[in-house]
Picture (cartoon, rainbow, N blue to C red):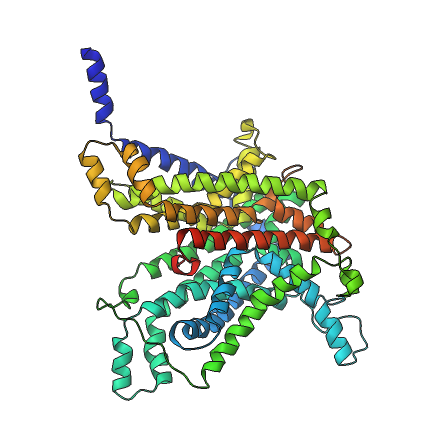
Length: 568
């Protein structure tokens, strides 16, 4: 009995918080750091394991690789700058003026963030394809052009920049709009009291105050474009993410793939470091007043129509036109025959889920999304509670490790996983299975779950948890009976967001999928061959869009949370 009591006493004295911290840290190191470290090892060593820089020299001596780097930089910079030029006045109009169509703009921003960009690209290829694109056919008829090509060609570097603008605008808008809505109005009032007109007040006071938010949005946009795969793939534009896939799967050149992956990761991590520095800089973000005031809405006259027109044009380009086209074309027998009554059919949807490829892809995507969302949320709520609720030394490690995947492009992460599970961890036999896809998804979407779960924890006072511990409940019991029920709405919201993103994931999937492990995004790309399968691909894309939209609306209704309110 004495020995039994002493054993129980020893169990009670164990610091379960530290044990959980060690286990979660080890898991994050395995998920996040291991593939990155192995890629650096492959890039910096010879076949015999000796240190070398020759891999970098040989890789960038190839003209196609150097061109891919130039294209990536040009597109990423161009997209982030143009996105900011549109997003800042748009955010100002929605947040600070009496413009019309605010709900439409917010809807367009949400759609641009939650839906895969390659769906928009599909629509604009149908609309602006140089041969049979509907807009080109219309322009040739209107201007009596005697050509069967153009005048618009979406398959260009400029076309890539234009099609990436909607998501870039959304990134900058999500950072800038909350800053404008919550800034201290006293400085603007002071400017107006000394005689400054509204335009001068905006240029000299308002915009400088929200400059950190604008820069943050531009950095996020730049990083997202560096990691983009779907749009350049569909437009056949040579960028770094495309070069990684070619080196790994077509040339079987692991060293070159590792070099390119290291370059993409280094670029993204540098941008992420700058971004985190900006948002953590307290002095730059002192725009919220302790007096509880909010900036007044400017009652503009006719000039409000400028913001309204900008909002309508953006919403039309980013949301209404592409997704309207996608859904409409999904009911056509043949794209080239246009919107004739005899050309409409429902067979595309029947075909989409009677063929083996899309049917298996739908089941795989659903299973992976369910598993990913559940695993990510469990990790996020445990790690988030340690970061937010404890004073454990080393808890910041969890924060940094969980944020690190933001700086890892999906293709680079997938390349690292392939190298890991084909070489040092080949004995696990998970390459070519759904398990490696699940590992990639969990790693990729961990930051998304962590951000929303931490936000939910921060919004709940810790009083009940402290009372639970004071009555003798251990950490695990407190988590199960107190913490999780208190933050269930935030956790549910995070779960749905991760599910949505996982269901349509492309950049990781395109490298890791194998025979029998296709997912919806890769199946859509495979069906998209420019021939009779194009309407079937659009039907699959329409299903993805409608499902994602339904889940996001459901999440907002069930939890009372808005994506626009929680994304910043």
